[in-house]
Amino acid sequence: MIRPEDLLCPTPKGLYCPPGDFYIDPVRGGVDRAVVTHGHSDHARAGHGAVLATPETIEAMATRYGQEFTQARQSARYGETTSIGDVRVTLHPAGHVIGSAQVEVRWKGLCMVCTGDYKRRHDPTCALFEVVPCNIFISEATFALPVFRHPDSAGEVAKLLASIRAFPDRAHLVGAYAFGKAQRVIRELRDAGYQDTIYIHGAMKALCDMYQRLGVDLGSLEPATLEKGQRKESAKFAGKIIICPPSATGTPWAERFPDPVIAFASGWMNIRQRAKASGIELPLILSDHADWDELTQTVRDVNPDELWVTHGRDDALARWAELEGRKARPLHLVGYEDEAGE
View (tube, rainbow, N blue to C red):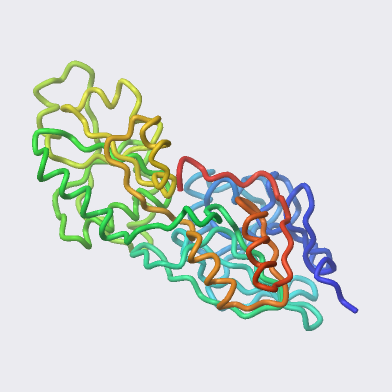
């Protein structure tokens, strides 16, 4: 009888597939063959012998690491099946960031699906999560506590626009992770009717250019360039939106803008004390991860024979599943971090 561990097994390097001799999102660079769910650096590392991923994730890795990020690359579109040895691998939308994918592996009648990072709600910059029936469902659990219930995205964007109207003499600096969150915030603003130029930190440019190449219209963007001492020049940023890495909001660079309102777009802004301790004046609860209700509903929707939980609050989600009468197992995989507040 085939055991799930015969097809995918947790190792210190990540989930390993013995019959296909590949890893899913290996946490260390340098494996011979990797299937990568998405382009965030805690899941996509340079230096592997070969990488299989969606075209968008391949593009993201090349943008971030350079064209030589792997010795061999193979792109597979959503729904396209690739055979690796006797294992059939199919990628499905995960809804996390552009190109993010769940990895479905099939072998000798057994089907396992690894979500990578995912969310269920609409995101104008990436494909919506797809429910994939399987025997073993392998889920993330970043926000797997009942306290994490993310509000409607449009409402959070409306808070930012209301602040601009209330404080037209102040610049609004929005801390957002450079890959995925920044572009989503920009696109959500456009969809809410905001058509003014949005200014971006230099760390955002390459990835915003990539999104534009991949067909996501971000509208008018300009660099948030301001040299020290240019007081007259700083006036043009009054009432404007500047998107920057979260780490930049506490630097002298941020102080050059007119009386800046510091905002931060992250699921972690659900925790008021965390926002307060970080000096965030305008917390925006915008997450690229599933919240508690999305995680639990997804398990019900997939209805697998067994749930495995890779990282995050894995014990909590596994315990919830057990209380529902489901077989569940926390994997306690290490090396996957919520980088800069996804």
